[in-house]
Image 1 (cartoon, rainbow, N blue to C red):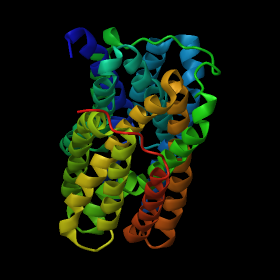
Image 2: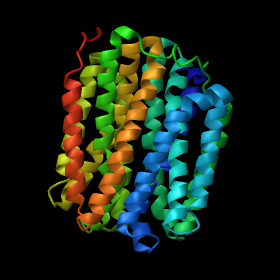
Image 3: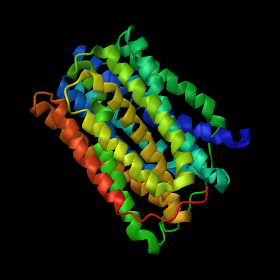
Image 4: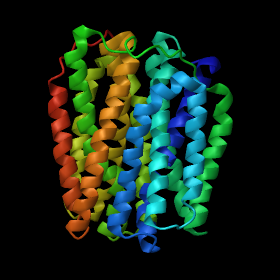
Length: 384
């Protein structure tokens, strides 16, 4: 990929790294530290994670209307600015409701960025490069997770307030680097972006599949570091290291997915990646400390890999209507994650903070996602 084509892809990756990898997911290794410092209890910490999911839903649904008013670069700037403000605001321990509001705002920013960064980047490059470009953008989520997993333990040495401010500073740096290279895409009306009538049953099935995938990923996306740190007694440092493995595996999942889909097709790859997700959730159930890292690796790979493949399947199914289908998938993901996120926060509190309970729910949702994906017809794989 030439530098001219790589720049918008890397800018898109900076957006997903900030809006998802840092704004939403840097909270995962912070979860046990927030509880240990007495800022919140375990149930409230789970609710803060769920609040970011609610915000993500709001941001996803608002993405296209905001982009039509501000343009795609304007929307991306708005999202990055909201991330910086939301993270900085969490540096003050203003109590649970203060933190809840700003974690919701962080989720809104992540939804805005995720809704448009991938489609806009794909629209900015030739068709032959769209798979690779999309892989780079979605891999940004894993890159952001990895950055947060490294930064959080270092910053925690200076306290929780310094940690939140440090994360805000990292996003500001990514924003400064990406601003001049934002991808551009002309926003049509909603009807023009809708999937063609002939594929709408398959489009709805893909939306259901991706929504169930999102529900299944709530436990690792919210409770993984706490599973290692408190659930398996390995401490906050190992919890952060577990999250680092999740992020690095996510980078691999994003980059590898583009190559695999080029060879065997998006829908076959989607089935394989969802099977890996189900294995990850199943491995979290036995109370064995040695399984934490395999869980992190498989879950991280699936989290970013399934997203990358779904972006490709949207284009396979809908062609010019891919943006509308992608936003519908992202909205379904956000809805299921919001509902399941708050439900699991209640389950976690009601079961005496049982990690097995929340990961068992995630396993059930992951198996349902795999079953739905098996109903998607597979067209012949492209020639090697």
